[in-house]
Image 1 (cartoon, rainbow, N blue to C red):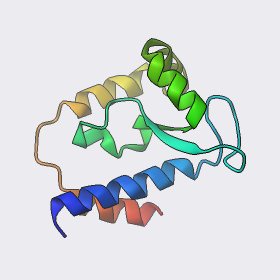
Image 2: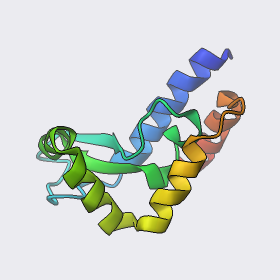
Image 3: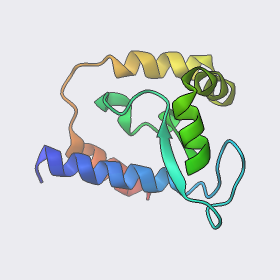
Image 4: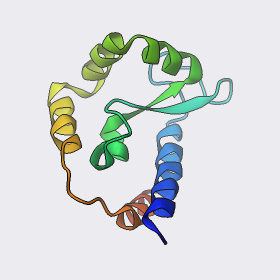
Length: 113
């Protein structure tokens, strides 16, 4: 499997794992009544944090949109949920420029499923 194909597969697996929370972590809406989405704290552009479960929240589409439009509030809320130490760890991890092996990540995520 190519790295590009593995990355897409990892994204799908990861998003599904996050949405399995079953409810919006912000407003509490259930996935049976709203669309749940995977919202990243640190941007998805950074491979080393893209599929870290500490870096994602299960949000309904409305809360995800609101937080996208209000990033400062999202940051405050996320730190309140996961803590400053987690944020600092993710920030350091996101700066890792070593090659990321997406095929290994797919295997890790499949094991969590």
